[in-house]
Amino acid sequence: MELLNEAIQRGVTPNVVTYNTLFNGYCKEGTPMKGVALLKLMKKRNCLPDKISYSTLLNGLLKWGKIRPAVSIFKEMVRFGFEVDERMMNGLLRGLCMKSWEEKDLLEDAYQVFEKMTKKVSVTDPGTYGIVIRTLGKGKKTDEALIHLHHAIEMGHIPRTITFNNVIQALCGEGKIDKALLLIFLMYEHGKIPSRTSYDMLIKKLYQLEKPYDACALHGAALKQGVIPQRKPRD
Image (cartoon, rainbow, N blue to C red; front, side, top):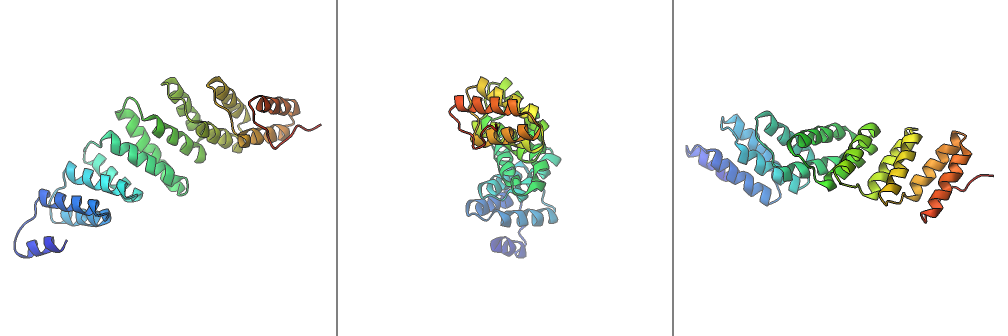
């Protein structure tokens, strides 16, 4: 930044290539937020950023885990009509999903990026798809989680066991027991074994709904899968 200010003082007008070189330098040295500040200065001096400017910054912000500023840069790119490549969209979506597990206000941003990505890319990365499904479950958007879980299976991407379990537990938390049970059977169908936590939550809910026979049947099914629930059948 000092060199830039010195050049300006000498009457040299930096162009977009000059700024892009600085963006690249900041991102490489691990200070992409300096690049974000420079972007504001660049626009203030009536030098328009190009696709390279935004792509360099977005890549750097993702590399160094600066998810919120990365979302802002992504939104600017979309607004100005710049394409974001699939790799960076995957990185942004994954970062947003994991961040939203603690910072719930980012869930909507994550879902918006996911929707843009599915419109642009015919096949979403299976690992990213799984994280999105887990995130929707954790964010109490269980209906959307189920839709995308079934869609992933239709595309031949069988979600990981942890993804199934997250959605089952979210469904139990919302009292959607029938849908959770259907998901248990779907897991069986695809060679997946539900966790003890998933079984325990369902057995507990079935007893609360005064369905002891269903609870006992589920307990027996768990034992056949080699899972021993903590909740034992009641007499």
